[in-house]
Length: 563
Image 1 (tube, helix red, strand yellow):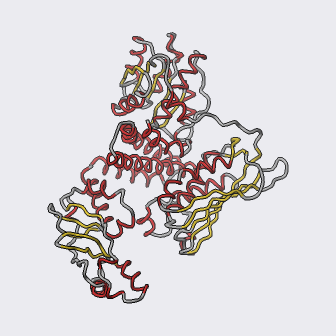
Image 2 (cartoon, helix red, strand yellow):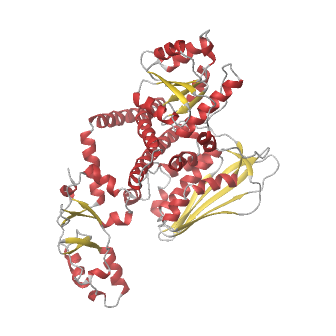
């Protein structure tokens, strides 16, 4: 199917057509919100009903103004013969304002052919893709059926979510892994723009998957809140820094302000506070078209031994909400209204999770809002005084980008999925390494008897012999390689998976989709530790990808581009 199949032949106006005449045409065509402006058979602009209404409100002799004076002279124009799959890539980077105006289609000679709605094109492209991918359709049906069953019991739901997570993370590792690998290559501006669309879409899917898992863990009572001595102001600065570019692109001022006294260093769950704050800032920037977003924070006084009450407010000058929208705002899978979802995207999980996490941390989330005047979200949580101030440590990027071994690191990559092995090899190409592959645990044990290695990257779910049996045999062996560092690379990312793999004898753990920098860091840490501690031991706590700062994830694109 092509773009021209979706477009309709909307009558056009010329640059000389007067506003009064255009107003009459809009009145007579209630189903049309945009008229193309055509000169000599070729489109030169578009006029929307909203733009005409703005002129009418301005008064004066608006009826006598020609279309050329108030049209958009740079509409989105595509060839009517362009395949829908390619249309999505072309229009995805376009601004929302341009998309709402519609897309002008032209023939091979550039002559006006018709007008199509951007979102209708998106919807049709998705429908075509679903029709052509029977495996995905079948998977969606199975997931829907399993979801219904999972709602009957908490245990069934947990099992289903674990399976879904694994099945989606496995192909997602290939998509994001190859995209990250491509980001390390020399690309032109157009290629990098398309690549960033893939990376951003993949990261969005990963974030959605993590949100679903988080919600499930919270509802099942399995979400654990931990306290770690951290600098609260530094954590909030990192959260704000993630959205500086997005705010700047919209000409929205983003600021962080401290109010009152109290300590900077506190003991709190840094990962979950970061998750809550980024959800609030993300929404504020998303729904603010002009003005500012202000993040203010304060720490309340507390008696000795009692927790402090931390208050973080995010105020924007965005679209705001009415009373009806506020009543259902914190319900899962709900946004202010259906038009909000269509216009801005999202699943409505972010605020639901934020409130649940806040209450687990002894606080809550409240909101005040007015349509057209913006909103203020206020997060509160409890935090205890820090025992000591921790000195800043070197960031992961500093290690991964400068890591070079004195000699080639010999690495055994064990995974039944060829794409996953290829991704690992591409990531490891940044360091001096020798890579040997194995498709299952039995082959891995054979390789270990034939050659010496510095580290093993081991998948868990494999035919013939899985990762669990493989690590058991490695640790039970009387050979020197029983002490070899073994890092689990797995799509298992549910609560307790890390602990389970460490108990089996794994040295460390990474959840798929794998982040390039994190993999390099884990290899570096494992080999460095093995050099001074040759005996296998339980690895210290290492964060899974569900526990990584969002800044570490999003930094992959920038770090890769600079490489």
